Image (tube, rainbow, N blue to C red; front, side, top):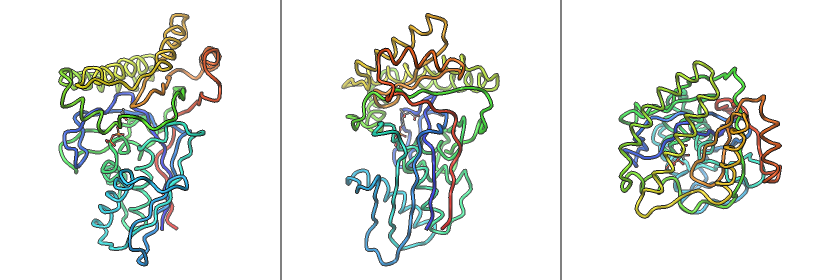
Length: 323
Ligand code: DP6
């Protein structure tokens, strides 16, 4: 039996498309910030008395599709450790209310850590990152804290995350604006697949990411929050352009997303530097220097309830306890 705690991450240069859907090998590199406010704690216990896997998340049984993803990772762990037993998986997401940020990133990173340790495997961080990837691509990066790169690689052995700056010592913060708490209509898995196969801009996106990865790593070295934010914002808009240019076209934005984008632009026009990024849902994440937090929060509370604003700082890497 083992327990692991992993923090979610938000991509500043997004992963949006797979080269190999089975092994979850991405089309491009990506880079993220692990956050300290949102995390998942998962316990895995292998038990020879069980005749099937039992998976409980936030005190509820998962639906068939989500349970299958967990069982897929358990099957990989069983084959690596030559274990035959089924497992009991109990997972708790620590996100404020039903935030819609209970990302698969922290969930599959925690699962990889707890399941491999419970099965007696002693995986390195790199191996854990590869195992987490088999559950969900973005989970690859949640093995590490701070700023993390997922190098796309070409196969299972070469596609893993690497820390760029685990102990971020400059005052970057991220404010999550919680817009919608419902389950998303189009999963990131099917949304990115549709973008790869139908957007005429997909090739341009690959060039955008190659360029942004170099630029953002330079900006991180310079500890330049404005440059990091600007690159992240442009990158997010270009990712979302892939959804609008897919066939059939779709978008994750709603009216409130655009309202928050406008507020961020307005703040910038008033000399307060802040930048936005969005993932496969309407929530907006705002990147800024800690010193500007109060001004940004004050402006946003004019248009949105303060209980929908969550400030995060860079968070740590995975922690695993063998019990
Ligand atoms: C927009 O990691 O959820 O958040 O690999 O199919 O499980 P799967 O997809 P997932 O996609 C994340 C997409 C994103 C961008 C990112 O996190 O890089």
